[in-house]
Length: 162
Image (cartoon, rainbow, N blue to C red; front, top):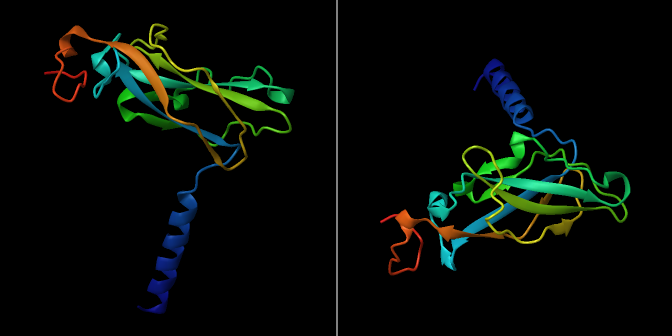
């Protein structure tokens, strides 16, 4: 390769690497979830009763300067399609210090954006958040009913559409 072409290739490589960086203004929280209906796995969130369209990460600060803060409140970056079964916030959750912790949980949401309190979720999990690092949380089990259209029990015991 000639010198000018090598220089252009190097510039494009560096610009591509710089352009693909993620802005870091705190830590991130990453969660995963599974949906069960009456003890059976659900492969399609619309088979849950009530149907679950999305899952919202809920984060509440405990202790120190973060007491009562809710860094995900009202943010679409904290809402994920239920089918995805995983989600992560941007790296902008304020870092914890000393005895500060975040209570991390998930909330099932319907197609209109309303919370589904009838879908049972586990208690929040307490975690610290470190600047520039993802905070991973164990998978949450969401418990719902099985929609009538999906109740046909197949051989694998899954609540699914026929």
